[in-house]
Image (cartoon, rainbow, N blue to C red; front, side, top):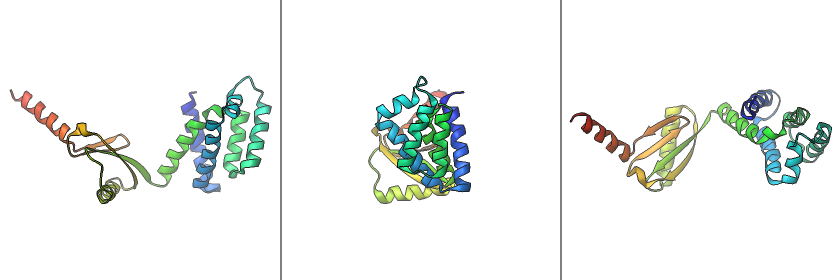
Amino acid sequence: MSNQASANRYAKALIDVAIKEADPVKVEEDLTAFADLFAKHDELRLPLINHAVPVHAKQGVIKELIARLQPSAPVGKLMLLLAERDRLEILPELTIAYRERLMDHQQIVRAEVVTTVPLAPDRATQLQQKLATVTGRTVLLQSRVDPAIIGGLVARIGTIVYDGSVATQLAKMRQRLSENR
């Protein structure tokens, strides 16, 4: 099984447990703390993901980290389980997968908006509210500038794209004109 598939399975189980037994947001914070620790300290991460290092040694290190960081119970149990199964290398993917499941649980969706000029704060707020109405969820709006769209905007929510750019409209006109020849 791929690391991503395993990470998704563990994330699903973790969000289910967190919803029933703990604060899912606190669980995300604790999981992120472990992932950040691994990402920032190669001297810690590399031995823990090395399959040549005995599992009991990895468990000892994880127990020490749990004692120091004092994460929520579900995260502590998960970290020990990952050490026991020698799967600590999936921690970055697991953290991302958990974060996505948490956002889904909280009815939050990310949206990216591309415009030719930076959005004014009031316009960004209006757009965020309209996208929230369309999706029925809270929207986290990220915007970026791309002069290539000429004008208008492009909004992307997951796999759905709302393209109101001038560049796309011109391309459609060009296609219709070439079809009518």
